[in-house]
Amino acid sequence: MGETWDGLINARSAVGEITAYDASSLRSKLGAEIRDLDPKQFVSNRRSLRTMTRYDMLATVAAALMAVAAPGGRKQVVATFEKDEQSYAVPIGFESDGQYKIYSDEMFFIEDPHELYKHWPADVWQSVDQHQVKPGMTELEADFAVGLGVPDAGSSSSERTVRYANGGKPLVVVYRHGKAAEITPGS
Image 1 (cartoon, rainbow, N blue to C red):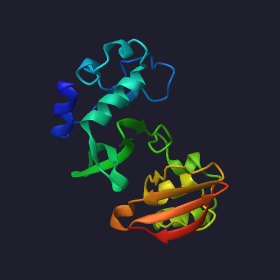
Image 2 (cartoon, one colour):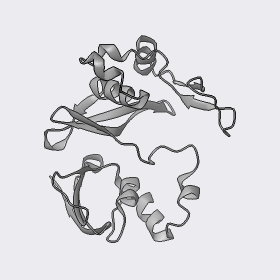
Image 3 (cartoon, rainbow, N blue to C red):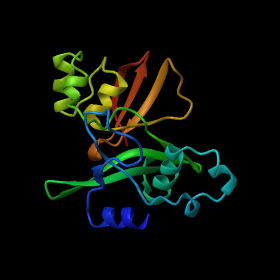
Image 4 (cartoon, rainbow, N blue to C red):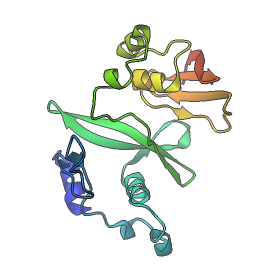
């Protein structure tokens, strides 16, 4: 992880030609890879390494290296990058009670999300552009608008409460049957 970590610290991109698998049939042959991963440094139970996928190993390493304080006593796992000479951090998961959850959703795209989600109505894209959650939005639409939230423990599939940091303006959104039903300022 030395080369990769040094690259993160010194804002060098990990994007390059994909080497982890044959990408010849893909439109883009570029991707970000951790080429020098040694999960033994981060996994105490060596036997579990035999059953872990590369994704599991990356998630474990990312969680161990980049966990930062988040609301509710959890630690948020972030990916850092630079764009236009500014540094950014994006939440990619969280840790709670020693268990790590890495989001494997559709938040990072190679293609324009407006093309991928062209079925979303114009008012949803307007809310996304204004960083607002409106009643009736789905959780994915809200994530696009205000960033990834942290669901409350014990939420059910029919009613789910999600807390959003929202750039220092916290929100609590209650989803009923997959749609935002209550939107209140959080603390």
